[in-house]
Structure formats: structure tokens, C-alpha cells
Length: 311
Picture (cartoon, one colour):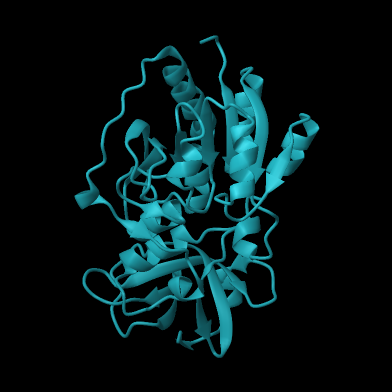
């Protein structure tokens, strides 16, 4: 082999553009790019850099499709004589028959520490669940989604006040660096794969509005994690106050031990505090809110003079 590989790239959004840009800058031959078409789903447009635009500017043919297992695409892939398929935020299952069209098969980049947090929105789920570690995994694409043998993995700590947006920006550069390291290891013949323990695997679904609604009977720690997990530009964790939907954008544990009925708003010397469920301290200090159809503002400003309960 030479110093570069012939790679067919499958990717979407900013994760995909950053990975493809790194492959091209490193001199790898990318004769074909496969990406998803633009989506009407707002969740698909948060980090919506266009893989199509990047590939087109580089003079690379592009196929846009939701699923990549059609016979027509298989014929097109055969003609590329690819050594490797690289997937970065490719969001649908890729069949073993498609992967077998490249000499080294396919590798995928996933923003979690597999085998845990396979599936969708792994950063958001990890923070909502109070995890202190996440990362990026490069694994072989095999029949079961996100369960292929692991080639590379890098750990990223999650600090107590960090949000999903913070972790997105800290993990994003790893897509480029780990993709290049993985391709280099395969090209040199030094790649070493480790089987995943499927007994440790967890698979998460896409997040929806119901996953973002606050249950004030949950402990303050859990609600704080949910708010961190749904940081802007993600759709915010929300509740209703006096019939109005309110997104809670920033919060922190209350500095003293407030107790009482979950959902009760207290205007205190510390600021706007909402009581949560047991166990432990029940107060959550609400710092920034976004009322329905209004810009974000300090919670103390929005709730000034108010009293009552969140639904």
C-alpha cells in the first residue's frame, strides 16, 4: 500500500464534514461521498454543515439517500474499487454486503464509549443520566448496529456543570483525529480490533419532546442533568408555569437546603428556586429561562413577583 487509501465516505452534518475535510486534507483518495438528504426535522439541523457542499466543492460525486443498501448503490460502490468505507454520523444501518465491497470493510465513528450508549443522541443521554465520562469510539461496521469490534477509543470527562453543547465541541475534533489514526493503522497493517462485550451494551432511541419534559418529583440532581443535556441549541428541557411553556436553559444546585412540595417556585435571596423531589436537597436554582415565543432571559427577571407551581 501507499501512504493513502481509497475511501468511500458516508457522513452527515458537522461530524461528517469535519471527518471528510480531514481525510481530504491528508491526501486520501475519496472517489465517492454518500450522505443523507436535507431533513425537515429540526433536530437534524442543529449542526447542519453540508457534506454535499464540501464534497461538491472538492469535485467529488455525491449520492444522497436515507438508506444505502439499494442494489443500484452497490453497483456504484463496486466500480469505486474502494479499500475502506468510513462512516461519520451515518444514521441508518449499513448491510454487511455493502461493507464487503471494500477490501477493509467499513469503520464507523460514534460519540460514546461503546458498548454503552449505542444508538442516537449519546451525548445528550449520557449527561441526562449523570455520566462523568464519554468519548469517541472507532469500530468496525458489522451486522449489529454500533456493536462492531473496536479499533480506537478516546475518553472525554464530563465535568459537573458541562452541557451537551460543551461536550459536543470537545468531542468533535476527535472525529477527525481518530479517523485519520484509524485509517493510518489499517493502511500500515497495525490495526488491532477488540470485540465488544454485548452484555454491557446499551442502545438509546432518538430523543423526543417527552424526553425533555421536566418531572419535578424527580431529584434535583436528575433535573439539573436534564437541563444540562438539553442546552442550546438543542431543544430545551421544559415545564409549564401558569399555563405558559417555559424552557429552562441554565440551572445549578441551590446553595442551601430548600424543602417542600415539588414544583413550587420560591423567590429567595439566592434567586428563583424550584423545589424538586427527594432524596437529598430539593432546591434547584433556575438561572436562565426562555418563555414561549420570547428570548432567553434571567429567571429572576422573568419570575419577579411571581408565586405558584410548575405543572
